[in-house]
Image 1 (cartoon, rainbow, N blue to C red):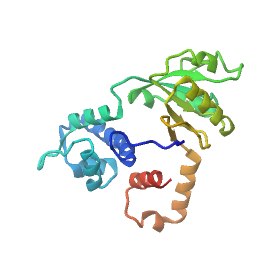
Image 2: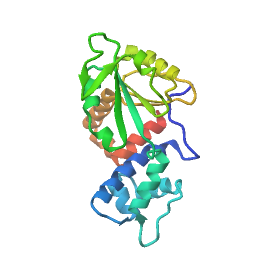
Image 3: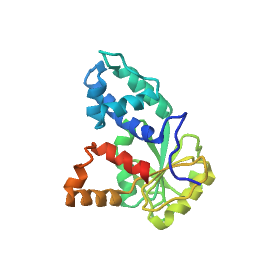
Length: 232
């Protein structure tokens, strides 16, 4: 059993983790009306080295044009297609504490093609209340929904996270974003991404106390983050 993301179609997991970063940079370029971009310019915007970017994009079959660079719109389309963003995905946020409330109100999901459709809690005093225009339901109601495009977002206390993950898996959910500080055990075929805010703050605290170590490897911040995922 594994909670780590697996490579798709031979694309390394570390490359998959960087594709959203490239997509964000490309989206900004499209908004600015930029038609083409060199690998150096795109790498700088994404916070990685140009050689790494070129190698990542080669896994998509994108090599750019010598002396011209990459077609911004075309590359954006290729990455969106590889990430599966041509489909509509609906988020089910489980756990309506402070974090759940904040996630429900976060507008950034919608701008990236993810709609918060369900808010879930088992507390009778919370079920039926409305947050960000969405009425809170319980798991029994969620189980009646289609799960083919559902992504479960766990925002519960750590003690409840595994139970929530088990119920999502039993419903047929195959993608889970876990904000709870807990390690989840899931079957093969279920992808889990962990977001541990406290851990990230602790890492920042370390680097603030040891600034020479933080910059000694010469990596961009995003490359260090990816390396942590590769070695976790």
